[in-house]
Image (cartoon, rainbow, N blue to C red; front, side, top):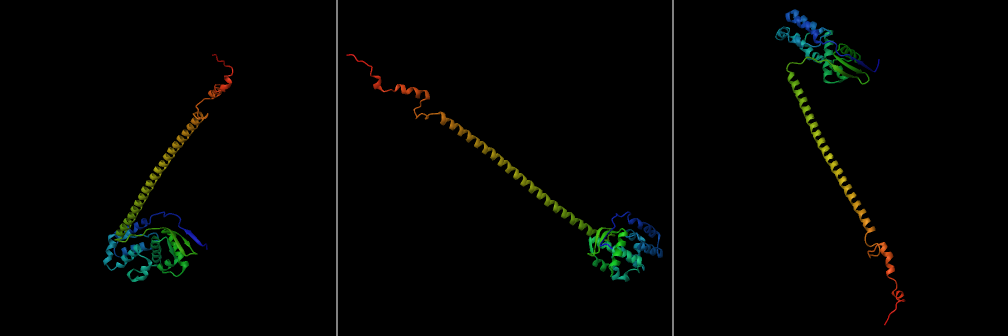
Length: 280
């Protein structure tokens, strides 16, 4: 045998409620022993796993205060209860045939699968009152082929992993708990939504700050470039003035041509007066 088995991959092909319709029709016109026989047939029917509509029939509801109240109790057990409840107080219910007991075990697996997606074999053995693992796996496989659960058996770790579980009937008065659970879920969603909105606002604010800071830095860079460019221009003009302006010839302010002509005017006076004659 392989170490794990993947079973029940197909989706449910037909609604289980449709199999109950014929029993509801029969219960409308039946009474006495005929009505009790209809209930027994419904409990043994292999494709019937929900019983709410049958419980709602007036003829069935009238059994509550009569001598056949156990039939109504048993119908309630199959609608809402588990196999462990039956084993705890069997005197409250009618005697179950082997087919009824097996169906109740299947429904118990469904109840466990609704509560948890990973079910240990130990819990299943206890809830189903079974002491043999092979027998337990056979019961699980039958439930899977009945299309009320889909899952995978891990024989090494002794765990049933549930992928799908059919819903069971909702007990009277349980709708209030459903409303509370849904309201708690809505409140949790609102809280998460508010938290996300706050994070979005914070992220947008941080983005705006970073954009403003980026613009400021870019403007500072532009201003710095302008200052550096202006300083470079002033330095070039200063160098041009030092090269062509006053002070290049000893501070006399004379141009190059004047410097060439000047020595001819400043010859030795003595040498120029040799040829002069003076009369009396």
